[in-house]
Image (cartoon, rainbow, N blue to C red):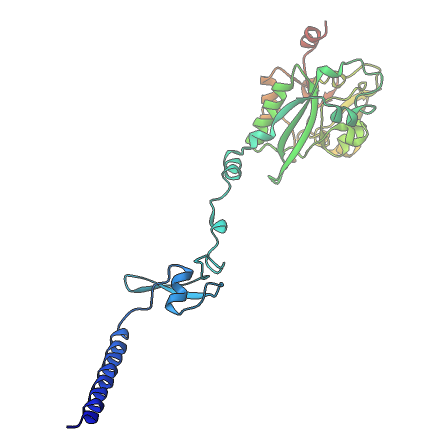
Length: 305
């Protein structure tokens, strides 16, 4: 064999060996998993992208199951397609606590006559010549239910000496579903007692005289309460004739009839007021005021000797 032939044979065998190496390397790589990308540098090295922000997909496998694809940028940051943590934070505990601790009793409260309240009543129920000090009055916020069981907010002003008793009475009436149609400040009717009664409104303080006289009513001291006024009218007598107010309550002067909002001796409203030391106008001798509960004269003299 010549030297040239030897050189050619050697070159052939070298080339053949190199081809086998390349072939074997390719077959071995086919059985490997995709390169695990943990950083932008790794991504570039694996040939999956560059470090400029190219998006790649990483398949997460747990126990052989596909949990879904999560898009990350080349630096490993979330691109926003996965669930936002801010959207899964727990509910506001303060708000939940507020709902959990709310009670209807929170709507029953007493306050002094603030400037805002006084602005509403001055010149109306609190006349310019009112002799009762503003400090002797209290504002009550209550809840009440009408004949259908619907709940309403109520406002009433009474004397400081009976405020706690009146609040407790209204609370018990509410809790026992005793129907009261309206409890509004008489000032919403221009402090006109007739208009308030015609609307079946229940009210307290109003600096005024007893109808048909010059005597100051106990309402002037905030020591009287009128309840469901249209259905429990005031009946007085003059020259042998009965005078019934309000006029649209005339048919309800017949106390043997049955009708809604009627106050009777022995019913819950009557019992509660009597238990708290009030007297009922439905038991007066010379007139009948079926809507009316007030503080006895003896107590009035104790409060204002």
